[in-house]
Length: 290
Length: 173
Image (cartoon, rainbow over all chains, first blue to last red; front, side, top):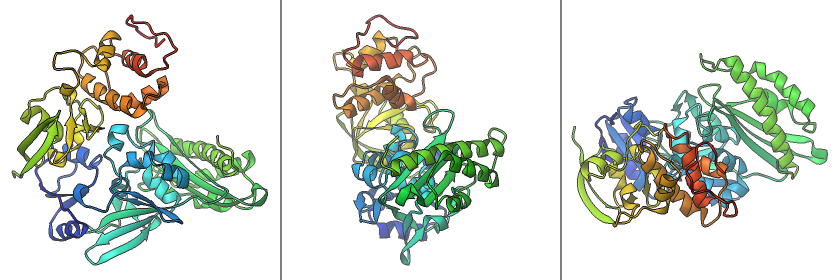
């Protein structure tokens, strides 16, 4: 089908974009359009106004700020995929972004668009959850910052006000003796994940885990941190036995199922993916890539 | 509601200056307004890849981009690929030789994806898994993909492997 009628706006500056959003009723922000355009064509979305951020300056680029890698919200997924800086300083993001859609959609799809859209099957929100990325947001009263953990409100819904725009995402840079891994399961590569997992762990003396972060996608409306497992890991080295301990915690995960992928099936995937991802991340943290 | 916008862009090397309703996507603009019907529409929601074109050299689904968003951009479609004399591009030639198409509906999108792949590989030879991954965004319901992959392997695969010029069905060697 074709998109329903709307008025199109192409502001040249962030303040102009925010002002349009403040003054227009039923307006939607258009970033890369790789989720919104299908929703328009399928008439799932019918905004009266589209505010295209494509001509707004200052929203693209990848900058190393030491503690964090700052990525402009309109930076394409393809640019992140090809960034040597991201590969070196935020390997979890680099590994995950290659799973996002196809090259033809990554050429247009943006980091900020994917994070704001919050599709349960999307990869980038899961990375943002695991690393607790910081979101930089512009609105009519100025800029504010929010940790990703406070960002999702529910299925496809964030805490962004209708007149706010995500401008940058700050992903914490990977530290010493730290390894990460992103894995997902789907029926064909490049499909939305049925379940995805992003993990990052830090090792101390004698390879003892000192810190762990685990996030799942696909099991609830928004990405979920697996706090129970994160708390169980520190204090001992990673091993297959520890993996079995984690697996035993998985039944406690709240998990939404449907007829195609029941909750129990998704929990099985969570357990298997988690152990595989942790094994990879531990090896990487120890300086051995797998 | 009609929301006409002026767009100026370059399509296949030719400057274009038109008014277009803002809700018209780029594939419809190319097909209806510019009569460039080589860009095909399959699903019209970003899944099938039939409408793949190049925007400033990067492969893009033309159904997932508004024509107004192409203002100021350089667009290349399948119509730009063969020579003016009708001589096929090597990618088209290989697809023909390897029976990489039957009905041909997906072929324009496949060719545009392979053009980008050829540029991005920068002379490096590609493995079959790399080629299959690159083609994963283009659905074909006829060939089972083998002919398309064979054509791409002919062009981009390791050169030390001897390739047959006979059409193959079910074998990539």
